[in-house]
Length: 203
Image 1: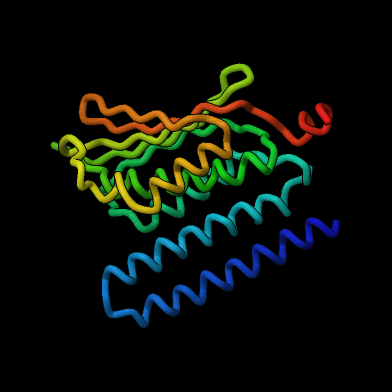
Image 2: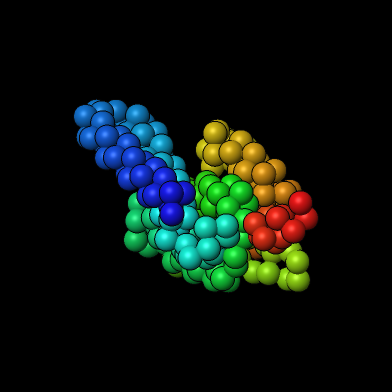
């Protein structure tokens, strides 16, 4: 009960921080500064979503990753152009919180980058997010259409977001795999499915 209350208070504090950042954004005249602060706010809201799931989870030891990933994608899409066509196919999957947290952050950064680079030669740009389990392993995949081949100076390929993706993938326990084929950019991470119960038994 005490741990649930801690998670609840952390979530409320994170939402307060998000509100403070939002007020600061409105005071910033430079578009680039506003964009940086909004991205910081998105990261804070991602963390708040994780803590919301932790304190509402029936089992404080394990968390269903699917609702968290859905909330993160919906949050990222709210700031995207309306013309982006998004599909979300996320399988219910109970994981150890130590795996859910970096997985959620990885998804947030990858979706943000995907929306930044999404384009199409005809029709609407597309975004696809999937999470599927195969035996004792699962794969998170984020893909987006491209108007053309990625360029070396593509901002979505550089910066803090890419470093964070690599760091979160290391915490999840799976390498980042990237493919570009038929004007489709895809990033995927395959990892072992573990729960808090599994780790307790191993100990």
